[in-house]
Image (spheres, one colour):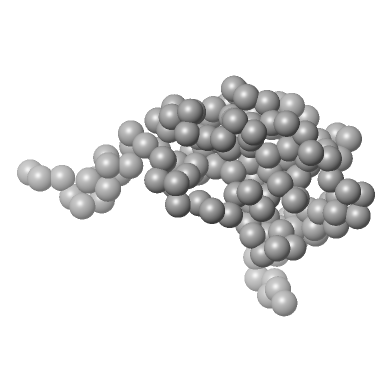
Amino acid sequence: MPPSPATKIEFAKAPGRSVAHVTRGVSRFLRSLDRSSLTEVVLASNRRADILSVGPTGEIWIVETKSCVEDFRIDRKWPDYRLYCDRLFFAADETVPFEIFPEDVGFILADGYGAAILREAPPHPLAGARRKELLVRVSRVASNRLQALADPGLHTF
């Protein structure tokens, strides 16, 4: 009996995994570093950071996740993220060659359960006003998401 279309899709995705797989591993890793993180945070530029992480001192990292080489090649927005973080990283699993990523950006290797920094991201400290705006934004996004979990019927404006 031939496999169903759903089975074919799952089999085709298995070797390359997914961005969700990388995101989960990176988020777990960041938590182990005492860093809090949120996914899919819309910045003032209307760009969406895959993972925005805040450390205990308020240092902000953005981690841009990539699922494959083509995902990286078509992405032209990632340099803009430097304006919204103290450190910028790419993250991918072992199926994406580490060498394709620019040397002036950090790199995190991840799987669905954890991650490791293979290349540190150079620091480029944010101005105080930008840091404050981002910390307020993160607080509001996190609060709104928690409220939506507690009250799924709540209409947002």
